[in-house]
Length: 306
Image (tube, rainbow, N blue to C red):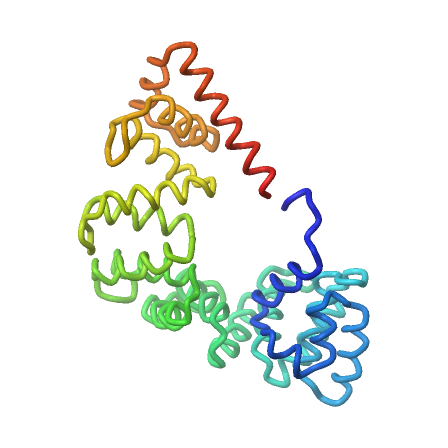
């Protein structure tokens, strides 16, 4: 989390995405209008009045406000109670949020079976994050018996809604034949879709596929671009791969200082390659200082962006 304060508008937008709320709700409900404007106490009072008239969305909003402590002290018991009322009324967002609380044991006793039930209800209503969580439950056997076919089915549903982690994981399902037949082309297709959303792990994986021509035509230039994008996000594996490109002059012009910079960044999280250690050892004193300064500048720049 950044040391800088997040504006109320950005916070509201982030929470709206997590819950699956949309701006149309703001025009439909006074409570949601206040919520999106960052007026959380007003939103809570309005939601309470709307909930008294049976609004499931209002109960969900109350749960969100109490869960995150927006304008009020965080109260997980009140959050769970509000989510439960909305869930009973059939609100998929509330079912998902309550399922998440139960799965984590957040404010209540952990119950993976109940969490699975709640995720399934929300998933059946088309809630992408619930579909994704339900898929993971079937993969890991938490609250449901392991069933890779059902996992793949729910993962597909979430991926088709543009859920980036689901797209990435579905690519892995096709790559390794988990719940579906091995299909390298589909693996590349879904991994590529996840990479297009900016998901760093997917960018790395799709970059490797492009380099090797696994399920997709070879495109080293695009692969290098993806490695750089992921490296700039702080992905150590991508930083390591980018370092190797600079060290060997593949796609990019050979540059031992750039190779050393990205290698030093990758070594921080513990990702290292012996051949790059050799590149580092062969640098002149001036080159080593330049590479270390470039790595430090990158770290400082990332901190300021965060």
